Image 1 (cartoon, helix red, strand yellow):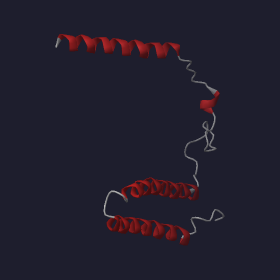
Image 2 (image 1 turned 135 degrees about the vertical axis):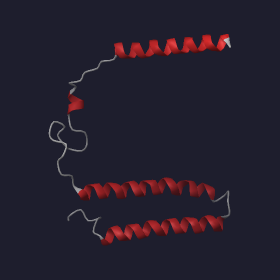
Image 3 (image 1 turned 180 degrees about the horizontal axis):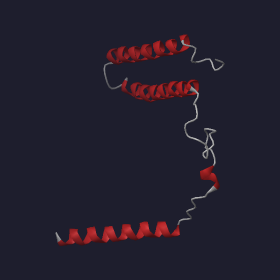
Image 4 (image 1 turned 45 degrees about the vertical axis):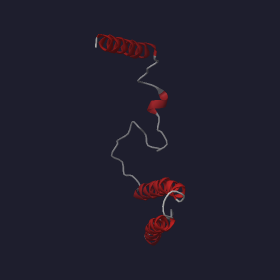
Amino acid sequence: MNLLLTMSIIIIIISNIMMLLSVILSKKSFMDREKNSPFECGFDPKSSARLPFSLHFFLITVIFLIFDIEIALIFPMIICFNLVNTIYLTKISFFFLIMLLIGLYHEWNQNMLNWTN
């Protein structure tokens, strides 16, 4: 018990020394040019944060995220084809892809895939 307490105190002291050294040695600048410049979004960071945002751009982003997650869910299904009943997994995969295609068809009918609206 005494050894555990001693080791815990030593670990806490070493971690605090490391954090203190990182704070002292880091080059922090609150007026850094890169941090004050717009990053990928094109908005001016010094202007009002309540500017109107393109809803179309937002919906295209959501579509991208949905299909990105779809790919992350389909890859493990491919590996599982060797491990479980292939008929059962084929039905699940088919249902999953049909749901995504219905969503894509709905987005297409709403003209969300056309950027020129």
